[in-house]
Amino acid sequence: MFFKKSIFFGNIVKVTKCAWQYHDKNDDLGPVFDYYRYCANEAIRIGIEKKITSKFKLYYQLYHKLRLDSQFHCKHVYGALECAASRLKIYKKTLKKKPNAKRPYISKNHLILDNQSYKIEKNIVRIPTESGKYVFIKLTNYVYKKIMDTKLGNITITDDKIIISYSRDIKEQNPTNSVGIDRNLENVTTYNSQGNCIVYDLAKAQRIVTSYCRIKSKFRRNDSRIRKKIFQKYGKLQKNRAHSILHYTSKKIVSENSGIIMENLKGIRKLYKKGNWQGRKHRQKMNSWSFYELQRQIEYKARWLGLPVEYVKANGTSTKCAICGSRLVPEEHRKMFCSICKSGVDRDVNAAHNILLRGTRVVPNGIAGEAVMAELDSKEQVICRVDAVKSCDGINLPIT
Ligand SMILES: [Zn+2]
Image 1 (cartoon, rainbow, N blue to C red):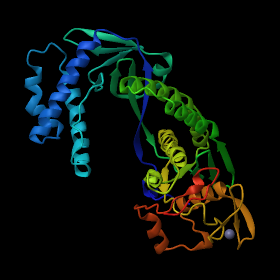
Image 2 (tube, rainbow, N blue to C red):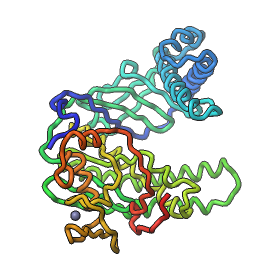
Image 3 (cartoon, rainbow, N blue to C red):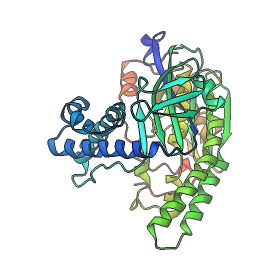
Image 4 (cartoon, rainbow, N blue to C red):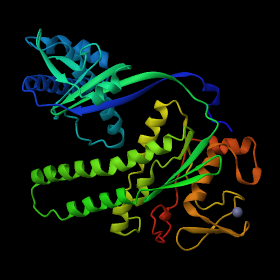
């Protein structure tokens, strides 16, 4: 059993995490936010005009101009220029796909400071505003405990939140076990190398998402400002409720302390676009599927412990038999039947088993060799069939 990057095991890697909390609104931060936004937007304007996307070139062009007559701390200019440079890079990329893309503009109140600019003493963060003037924010015990013995990174401050990134060095583990994870709309199924299978129910999280979608669809007033406010409110509530269930699940999966293997679902949203011969309700349901959030949580939690995370192709994981490799015949209630093994199998368990086998380079029928390795190593992945079975009711959809 081995992973693709097996030669790198034992390496020391840097892993990063974020901790955040709310803070009380401070009026002293208001002018700093305005100055930061002014600097960033000015840098974006000049960057587009002179076609600059490099951070250092922006410093060279703009630093003295922006520092002129300003009483604010010079570190804010650095933060703003860095922020502008990253926005310009994204804009340059999107221009290739969409020539009429909207110009970037920073409208939100925020500050980004590097770890040289702020100071944490005991549980109080000191943020410079002007020369000799500071703003103090008290950290909660929870956040302070998390960042206590770690290396501190950038800090982001918004109107009501403070986000601190922290990192540590960890030795990459080489776990003896690995676990294949199959993500579905209403459950997550894991299958580990000892043959144990666990099904985590996520139906509640999906119910929360659909109920908020229904509430939002009832909004009738033709006023975009009020709509934005109300949608933001419901979006926050939905996120808080649904993500806590996902956090619970991802924590349990990672606590097994084995290598993580997941299917690569990049580009799956393209299958549920308008004009793909699917119903509106079905598309709405499939597009509200939060597969990426669970993947993100599992990945960062596993990396924090030094566990390897790998992605495999998603094609045909639930239609091929994990034991003999032949095509399965669908039956009722998410059951599949293998005509060669002469046995029925749950489709999610079979998919998780297949993912585990792909990740650990064991192929059904026992074929092994360079040809198979080459096929599994290729990174390009095309999902060319509408996979109706990700949803639990398994409606038969026309194949595009
Ligand atoms: Zn079979």
